[in-house]
Image (cartoon, rainbow, N blue to C red; front, top):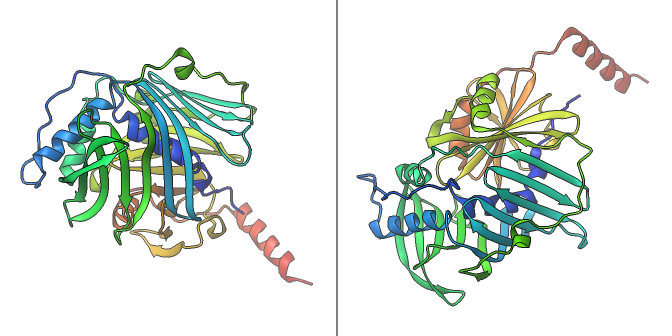
Length: 379
């Protein structure tokens, strides 16, 4: 018996839209830009840092529109999607993600300031909430966080979509592992392409413009797309406000920071079947990791086929490779699941810094389990 569901279904096609949203919005809090300071001793290339600083500023200003191709190599093979994006400014973004099959289905992510709506076209549902973007966040805080953990190097120039661009290589300082490459338009800082790599150096995720108009002045219809979706019959997904986020994490016994430089960034709650699930998102300035907390016991049948047993600090868990990587384990009457692009060693460190406890079944649950066992085995 289990009320637990691995939330992989929330990653595709929502994964594509949310990944592009993170790529395009960045910190997303409009504020005056500051000069970026390069942490000493990290080996960062000042030219690469300047380009990334320009990209951070571009995510908060300027209008552009285009088509983005997303390709992910991971659980379930290779998946791809083509998204339509309109970016008006730091607080206004629209991403349309068609979901096959059929033209009458799809998703719309609409960002208006701190308000975010996700519309499921064809299903008549609208999820609305406030994002956890604080006004006092430094505009380059994520970049500073990134540069404390990763080394950025300039690899050279390329031509992309008839534009002069430069490629920035991003390595993990601790072991020189190649993590990502960014292709950045040299004059505007527009992020034209972003690739992430697995431990073997193979591309596991690619987000790239295939067509872009910049500069672009969005119309009212662009930033306020018409939809015919009505209120959802199911309980909507709800994002936590900045003040709620800290309280929710504390109530769950979750820290606001995790090993490998990850800090609590946002959170949401939603329904998965009959279960109420809380999702906390941690970031190291480059990658996001989602921590899902939900009632029930962990079931191998709901996990990717590559899931293998792993011994954590206090309990046994299950861990799997392939994007998105993850690890799941029991914390008493709840299951915790970490999912994201973080390397396996970092996911394990984070899991060991989070609550862990074996499942304690009540007498009624144990008797019910015994009855089920007998019914299946007796003639």
